Image 1 (cartoon, one colour):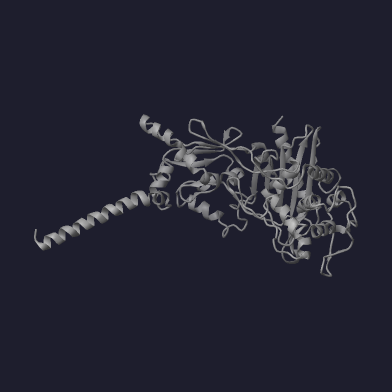
Image 2 (image 1 turned 45 degrees about the vertical axis):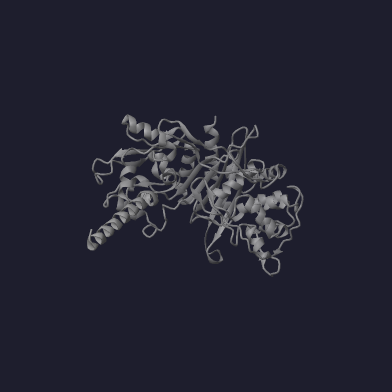
Length: 496
């Protein structure tokens, strides 16, 4: 072979080698990233080639699939449908051919499409038998009755959110947010239909931001509902020993190291009030001073035990609630009554109420009970898991008696359930908004219900963003407490 031909042969050999290296790089190194690339249309085609599995509530699907019949691009065979889509959107999220997926639809996409690695044997068997690939189901812990009560109550008020938990297991029973949206309206791939519906829901086009999951992703100042955490800290750290001993609480109370007086709403008589009375009428002065007496480090420790300053995954991500880590003494006082930089999700405040109801033990919140294969075999089951113990059983029961007084004869009477054997504990709150409290506050209510056998089937947190809210604790009792009552009653009735 002459020299030029040898060079050409070597060059061609190098080209073949480069091609083989590139081919193997794509097939083995880049395979996963290319498979998951959002621009890979084959992924979307495969995802919607067969009906998706369903998201289940109380044994019934709240999702479905329908043939596109050519109304979208012909290569998408099916698109997602939703039953009562707006009510369930904070749970399901959406699965859209054009805009991707969120929340349970995204997190459990592998199960719902049948592509999860745990379904490999099933897929292989279907391939051998010629059966079309099918998706599995996501069985939730949600209660349809509780969700309906929460959503219906919020619709009457406008913007707001509800989170309800089973205190004994951590199972989420309701997760509602308003205003909401129907994921069915943009589940397809039509530019004219789905694109228009999608654009209409974006925050830039709708300032009410209906696609915001307020129950998990919005953090609000909790107002006086945070006094439950402060009371727990004061009991746990020995600042007070019982609900009915007088506290050392001057009136007026001047914030430490300042000349600024901390005010009580409505000039209520709070001087040296007992812890029970201070919670009943919601004394800022008592709880502000208690926070200072406990100290910022111990207040922070207690808040963290309740779940503050940490994201929660249920499995949908819930934003981290905040209790400030850097505070001076006046800021500690304000933070201890739910002001300054204290901010929380509704889920977090439901966790606070549930820990108190469960005799001091906080269970890890979750909303997926189990994952099912297409043949309904259980792939994965969620077992209840203890998260922390923010307060002792003794102190939890002291706090329960205080919260029950709030509902019996305090600011939370609208949460009463007039049924034999049912006891309700709660706490109202309003959250200041705007510069120098220039905007209408948020109305809050947190609560739990106990049955005569000592069990506690439900704890609830409700926040209402309403222009008619007053600047006192009665606002939470008037706007939010009735919603909490209806949710608790729905859970209790469903267990009969």
